[in-house]
Length: 122
Image (cartoon, rainbow, N blue to C red; front, top):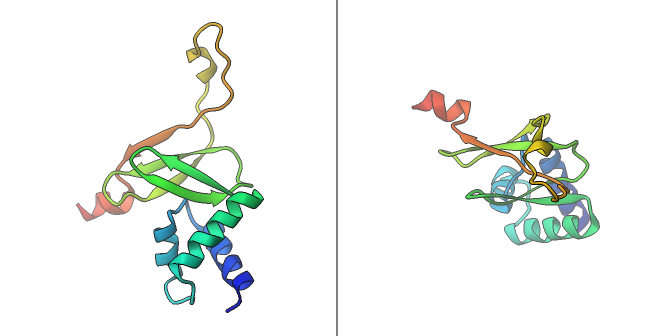
């Protein structure tokens, strides 16, 4: 498989995911697609450099990647399986928390808990 096809396979898998994925999670999902872990890392680096992918750092969850063209959203991180899920929508009234004289330029919200699959397995 050509390098361009491998990169497209990586981008397609990220686009189909229900949340941001780490390089290893992505590689694991690709399983038998003929894409090595080093190729996944290269594709992710290229995607971030060219602006098609965004790296997301979830506290305690490590660095993950997702398409940059997704609408504004937040994340839910399962404390058991460490899987991250996209949460669309936003928290109202965050501006009221900003101290006087400060200017908010962005925000990130990460909810933590147990995903449905892990809760049902318990």
